[in-house]
Image 1 (cartoon, rainbow, N blue to C red):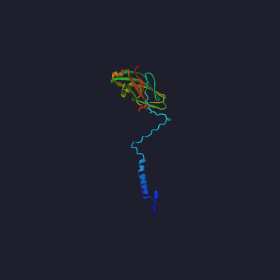
Image 2 (image 1 turned 120 degrees about the horizontal axis):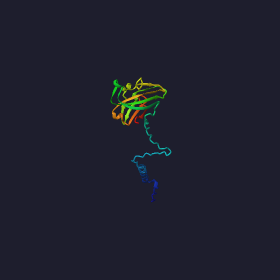
Image 3 (image 1 turned 90 degrees about the horizontal axis):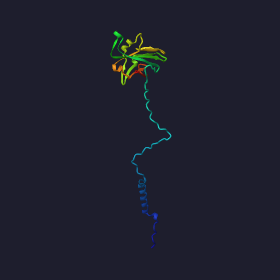
Image 4 (image 1 turned 90 degrees about the vertical axis):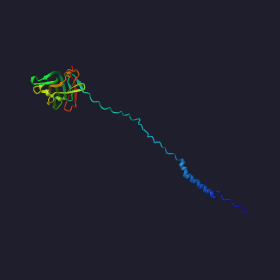
Length: 203
């Protein structure tokens, strides 16, 4: 009786079954093991710096130009207009018997206004304000005709180029203000006051 020949290793059915199982396991599970776990932390944004660029600094807001300040007898040029205060005086009444009496004390300021521009300008007593510290006083327009005679003064007066207009500005103020050494006359070139300057009235 002859011996049965053994089948070659690769012709046995269980070898192929085992091979299929191994290949299937590698295909299904091997990929998951090799994949890196997704990071739950948010990615940090990279900040790029350019060493070649100069650091920019915040631009400072332009400071408001300080108003010019001069004294009595000194001309003050504001825009195309030159203001000069020639002196001050006080009174309780202007215009005499038929004039006007002050509620407090009249401070009278002698002013000259010269037009150095190329066009005619208009002056008015409202262009002048008296200041003591943070307190501001308006000119008394009703007293203007009593201290300015022959049509002089600053009530809506037109001044042509090269002409100087002289007159008095009257302020009705308390007696202690009229005699204060901290008096400032604020002047401006027009109704909107876009150009201003200051004249110190104390000697």
